[in-house]
Structure formats: structure tokens, C-alpha cells
Image 1 (cartoon, rainbow, N blue to C red):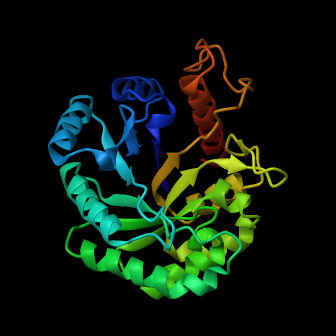
Image 2 (spheres, rainbow, N blue to C red):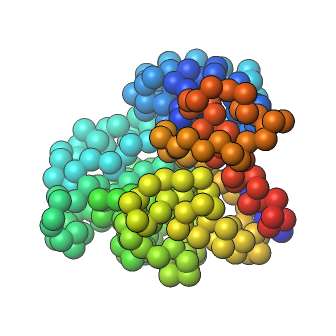
Length: 284
């Protein structure tokens, strides 16, 4: 039996942490993939400031599912030493926040160039991450993202197999693969399923890359969640709605959280939650 735990990028609700937690409470969500806090990236706070943030979430009964870091989201040609220092700082943040996972990327490749030309440098940098993280008790999660080395399922697999570490796993982001014109199911999912540790829930359409609520796009969200359920997946489904320009609120019913809200982050987030919960109800 699977155990899906819903989490969220709460900074898509509002910049303010208290507002984020208020809205998440309304939806019965008690985990945050923490990226932005009070208008600033979590990784840009000092350790003393992070301790205060930890007190805030503890007081409300919240935990982090992951640190939504920007690590690896620089050009492969950019200087790495400063970036590695930010990674060390993020490891210290993860310890304070009692967080097992750090979300990361595999570096932007110069536009129009063959990613294979930069493969060795990508692997070298990721091996530095792994070596630095050893003994910290964290698992580094690679997110597939358009424009980075690991944007397609094939290059994600190459990275995960080459680095080959027990504390290096994959995030499966439905929408990001669609935006790279990859086929999620069965192709991408079956290629990566042995490495998938964490799920980002957002969907998109092939025609223009537009992000839509889960199940309304071409990301095979329903099919893949059904397979994960059958396979006994135990872990996070982290909502990253990206519905900033989405105006269809028909999923929300009069008794739904967010139904009476004006247009904005909290209402769009309510649509994303409702779409996911509808899917989960159908596959139980």
C-alpha cells in the first residue's frame, strides 16, 4: 500500500511564511518544500535566522519535506567554488531544519550547444557535491529542468547512474519533462523508476508548454501516480503549481478551501490542491 504525503512550494501561495502556513492548514497540508521565506530564498539566510524560521514552523506543527534550493541552477561555465560554499551552507541549514532532502539541479548548458560536450564537468561537480555531503545524513535530489544537463530522462539516468550514490536520487517533475518534449509514460518513468525518490506535482501541455492543474495536461500524472500507488511508493508529492496565469476555478466547490478568495496565489494553489486530491481519491 502506498503512502502519499502531500507537500508544497508554499511561496507560490504568498511570500509571507505565516500566510503560507495559514493556507496550508486550511488544506490539511503540514509539509513545506521550502524555497522562499518572507521574500527571500531560504539558502540566503544566515544560520541564526534559519533557527528563528525553524522555531516558527515548529510552533505551528510544520516540517520540511525538502529544501528547495537553487543549487546547480547556474551555468556550467560559471565559477563553481562560490557555489560549493553555498552548498556547504545549505547542508548546515538542512541540519538545523531537520530536513532529509535538498532539491538540486545539474547546471545550465550554453544554448544551442551539445550537452555531451559538458558531461565530464557536470559529473565532476556532482561528485564534489556528493563528497561534500558525505556524513551529513541528507539525500540530494536532482530535479529534471529544461535547459540543464539532466533535462531529458536519458540524461537524468546518465547522471544518476554515473554518480551512483545511495544519497543521490531523482525527482520526477511531470511538467518539466513535457516542456522538454519528453514522453513521461511509459518511456521516461520506466527508465527512471528505480531512482525516483520524490515527486513534483505540476502538469503541462506539449503544444505551448503551458502549466495546468495535475491531470489536465500531457504529463501522464494519473497513470504514473497509479503505478506508484500499486508499487507501494512511500514519500512526498510536492505541489509546485506554477498556475500564476490560470483563471479557471471551476474545480473549486462552495465548500472548498479557497472558493471565496479573490484571484491570487492562494486561490490558484487551492485549484492545484483540489486537482491532486481528486486524482488521489480515484486511485485509492
